[in-house]
Length: 87
Image 1 (cartoon, helix red, strand yellow):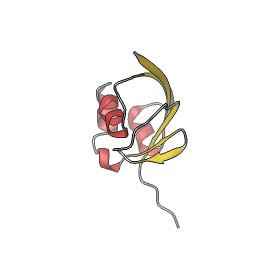
Image 2 (cartoon, one colour):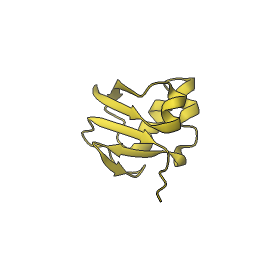
Image 3 (spheres, rainbow, N blue to C red):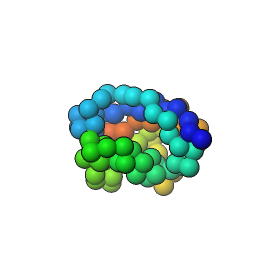
Image 4 (cartoon, one colour):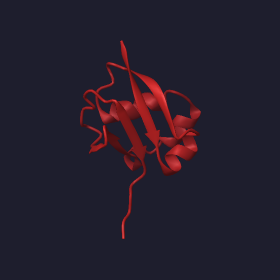
């Protein structure tokens, strides 16, 4: 089984993957933020390069920030981006 999820990529994550957004069929056994990263890295060289340093990636599920160990629940949208700085 799988679920169709909209993925949105920002900044250098987007540049390395090569698309701004896409819809992917996420397997039901992918349940945490960390598992999402691991699964995405298996999709190809560009994903592996973009997500090589998983600790540098931030994630939002349905527009709410989560930690890698958090579950993604019934994710409809997952955004991946580098750490943000503010001033």
